[in-house]
Each structure stands twice: as C-alpha cells, then as structure tokens.
Image (tube, rainbow, N blue to C red; front, side, top):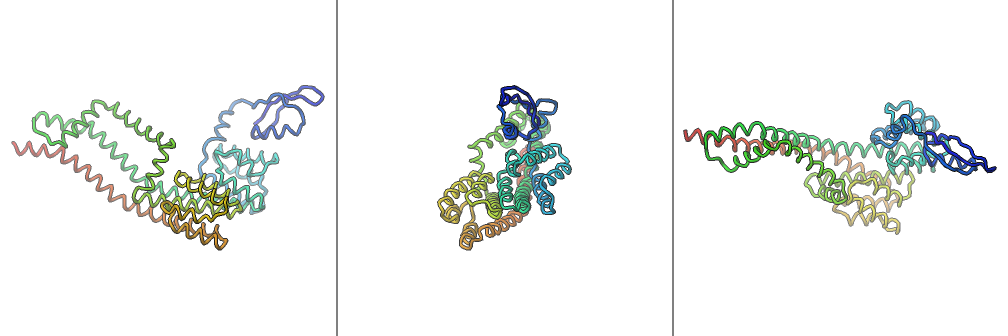
Length: 402
C-alpha cells in the first residue's frame, strides 16, 4: 500500500511524496533513511482498501498455513531463495487473501526485514509457534527444516482436532434432527389427537396431559418458542465465550465419562508435540513452554504451563510439575519427561509421548462412534416409546370402554 506524506528537508523546504510499504511501521523505517523531518503521513484510501484490510486480517484456514509451510520448505531445500519461493506461493495461491498476504511478505523481506519479522506483522494469521520456529530456523541457518517441522506439528494438531470434531458430528446432527421433529410433531400432530380426546371426553394419563400442555403452548406461541430457543442457543454460545463460561466448559469436559479421557490425551499430545517441535528447532526451553501454553485452549492446561514456566526458570525439573498434575496429565507424561531430562533427549521423549497419545485418541474416537450409535438408538427408542404410549394408551382406553 502507498503512504502519502509531507516532510521538511534540512534546508527548511517543505515537500510531499509517497512511499510503498507493507505496514505503517515499514513506512517509518523507510522514511528514516531520508533524514528529513516528517510532518504528516496518510495511508492511501481508494477502491478496494477495505477489501485489502479484510484480506489481511480475515481468518486463514490452518490447512492453508500447513501447505504454505510445507511447500516453502521444499522450495528452499531445492535451492530457491526465499523471495522466489514466496513469489511461487503467491502465483499458486487460489484465494485472493492468500495472494495478498504472500505479496506483502515478499515486499517486507525485499525491504530488508527477516522472514520471522515479516510474519510477526500478522499475529492474527500466523500463530506464535509458527513465528518462533521460523525465527529459530533463520538464526540457525536451517529455515527449511524449521518450516518442515512446523508444518508437521500443525498438521498433527489439525488432524487430531478434526478426528475429535468428526466423532462429535454424528450425535450432534441426530440431536438437532430430533429437536426439529419433536417441534413439528408438537405443533401439527399432537393437536389433532388432542381434538379427538376432547370429543371423546376421556380421562387422560398424566404423561398425556404433559405432552398436550407442551403442544398447546408451542402451537399458540410458535414464533415466541422458536425465538426463545434461538436466544437460549446464542446465550449459551456467548456465555461460553466469557472467562467464566470457558472455565466451566473446560472443567466440565475433563469430568464427562469417555469424553474426559479423549480430552486429557489430546491435550497431552498437543503439549508434547508443540514442546518437542520448539525444542528441536532450537527455541530455548522457557520460551518453548510459554508458547505451548498459548497454543493450548483449555484453561486448566494453560494454568499448568504457567506454573511449568516458573519452575523451568528456576532450573527445577519439568517432570515434577507433570507428576503433581496427574489428574490432567497421565503418569506416562511425567515418566517420559523425567527420562528425557536425565538422558538429555527431552525433545525425542516428548515426540514419543505425542505419537503415543495421538494414536490413542485416534482409536478412542473410532470407539466413541461405535459406542454412541447404540446409546442414541436407546435414547431415541425411549423418547418415541414415551410419546407412543402417552398418545396411544388413551385410545385403547376409549376402545375398551366402548
């Protein structure tokens, strides 16, 4: 983007001009080279400026970042310079927002900035772990390997999350369909049966009265009921976004049977793999622990990583923290970390932990799908049976009286 400025030269004369820069910070760095006094600066506003801002700060999918890191690593290993690799990435990108980002990165690097500094200008797009591993790779002269490592780390995390979401998708869809079907039956089917019961003037069971009461309320207040349901859903959604809601949800997920074990093992795998990737890339252990804490989503695990950061700064063993937190980190994690610290192969041991628990989560998500099906069948059967008995039993009572 262009920045139009007004400045004063050393001889006191005033002049205006423009400088092409990726960000305002980059503009100031470029302007300093003139040695003049800056009076004012204004970013060019024109057609597409809002689109450009949206392009830069809109969310990029994790799979796009993984492909970018992997392809860039391969091109660097093939001998291409970084600027050329970014140009190729820009040409290959099919999404306009990706093209824009790659172009901005290339401009920034061509202006003298390092790759990690250029990436750091987009913190909403590139996570801290990505930037830190790139920085370590640049400083060690092994950028290609660092990019390959971060692509593997992000891919494993992405696949792990995808498996968990996939396992929960089936029961969620079934549950939503059940609510819609129940709502429609209450509004259209039950009122017809209710009219029959009123005409026959028969005594109704309590369960039938409850269904009729709910049906009458929904039929008479259909829009209000639907609106109330939407408000409740959005209310729960926004409540879970608050710190209190997150804490409740994070604690609850670690106590629900079956789900809790998957949550514990997936968080253990993510902790171990992120730490392993950062340490193998040459990131110092304190920074690695801090970044890992930022990567984790569950507040209970963030708390442990905060404590771990303090312990590491004091020079105490990491394994002591994992041992004390055996409720959310299985004993196997503490044992492997202890062995890694004693042998000096902490990164390798953590990688082994990550691989083990990733395989465990993979198997458990498959088992969860198998378990959920019969449970859902029983639940659906119970709901249908309750409805059928409540609505049909009065009909039999009337027939017997006749």
